[in-house]
Image (cartoon, rainbow, N blue to C red; front, side, top):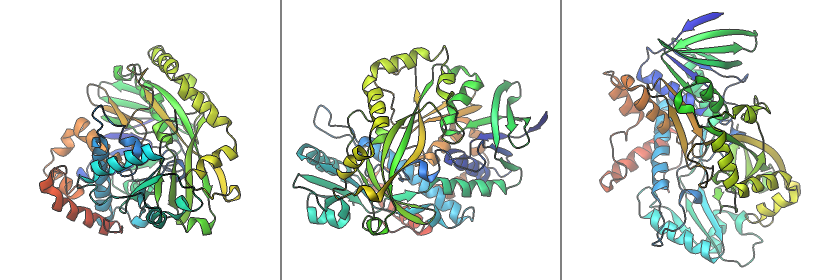
Length: 498
């Protein structure tokens, strides 16, 4: 068995590992990094452009990030503010990577697309009106527009209005939303990382074992092309394998992994390639949650630009699956993840979430016409012949011991570490990819603080994140924030705020 030693092992080549690896190498160029990816190509699972919504989640249009009114009738927008703050770090780091020549052609992975929220019916209209008032009071969202005027909304997104009846409608809009190809930016950063000294990126390598040793961690990896097993030792291991993270976390055997389960939810999109229709829509339009649908399945009608081609996507529709990964997953992933320490959590969640189970079954059995009916609540004149159904990615929702009545679909993500902070795994769903830079900065701060103690680190960190020491929530920082935001727009070739 071949063996070698490195400083840090990154499992998975998606947006999490790509950002973490690139940040670490910039902060400490002497670090030795090894990346293992089970697929034959980089970033083909959750980060692949067709497997996620591609929304640069900034809390602008996602109604699920602002819960219903509290007992006083107020709308809590704190989550939306926090997500905007986190996505700002992603924009800043990607702009830094462009300016440093780490990645080229930002148009390949990020484009300006306005973000809209759209509702129907008088109570939702009043909710959106009050949500706009609460959000626009903060300088992150002070340029958000609200309208119940059909002519204005039609100007923003004609497909929403053409052919619609006279029911009450309302929309909000912000012009500085983005469409992000997370697969593209992941591959660009991974390719840069592979070219750096003491770094290696290996595809077609499946991690089959993770053991704690006296001098760190030993990871067993099967080279799928050569059909041989090798070992790599490291001081720190990061598991950023999307749906594959939970089984790998269980392999580590750390006490902190006990009690965690996973519930995979597949996805599907309706896709329109008709250029006459695609040309009429330039927006990401998020609507209202549908009954028992999980937050990751809130419907939206999106402009997407993938590999230079523009299309419209609508969905996502949920699908039942037992696989944890779309390309390399196995039908046995879910049953093999059930352990004595998590079976109680899984059973409790199942007992208290029967409506969600029913929803997933209904989604899997629905016809193309029923999907079109939901689409027509956004786009009344949608014609079946212009749309095709395609599979999206798989999200494995983390389930904890404390889950049950609260449901299984958590807001945000979960970073699981051992007490020594020598291994970390990322579990969870939306808005994960968009806020991946902030999450990986948190991993560095919590698990690798020595990286930040280097004399040059503070200077590099300031270049990566010009707002690092700036309180973005303070009114006194408004102008400085806007100046930094505008510089990022220029570097990333995005439109000015509006």
